[in-house]
Image 1: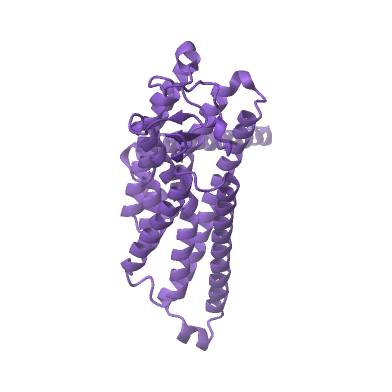
Image 2: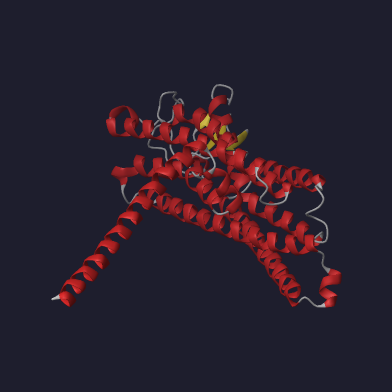
Length: 364
């Protein structure tokens, strides 16, 4: 939604579709949904903290890649804070004056549709919340590109990348990413860019990131095939750390590809909800569709974090070593062993009965 501040002195675009929605007061169903969101947000926070701990304390990839992944995961805290700030305005607990709940749009270039306010100071909590949600969304948009750059550095320094920390690469990439985020944030938050250009930039950046990751994967696969020939030239040119780094680069691409598939699924599902909202195909379910759309962004750690951790063997093993997970796993394993032993016992009894019947028949 875009706000006209002080008669077009400037405009501000925050990532909300509807404000002052009184459905949450008039319906017990929507009150129940808010409780569900609160519970799921707590679970998502646990998932986020656990994932950051596992990624930063387990040697699965180079420290630069581990740190970049951890920074992306932990940035969800910004989204959580932003969501907490926005929710009172979304449900009408804190009201925006002269704004009807019938005003519903994501972006518009029609000034007449933009709600007008005199100053942002009165609603600073809403605008700060929108700012933080934007910041998180742009971190997600740029993360694949930054990971692709890190893997490109790993391929370029393949001879000794694994043996050296090269922390300056991580610092540069983090500063570069947040520099990009701030530029994008300025254009979007102050409504300096058309919605179509914003979508085009997002698509182009991530398409280039996928192409860069794919090119790195192909390059490293070629190197691995050279290693496997075990010729004198390949042994002289590529050391053991270089061979290990090439395999790590391919493994990192496979992990990124899984996350990309999950991300595309979430984006596609969110677009379906947005289309239904925009064209008002189910007007009676508008609040519910909006709730689902907003929480696909807000609660994405519930899907992304498990996929991330379970896709990498060292991270998965670290998770399985935790006491709670291990106790659940032990109970499941004991049940499986018991079933297996019962099956083996039944099979033994069957053969024994057959042998006994055959022996009695032979005696007769």
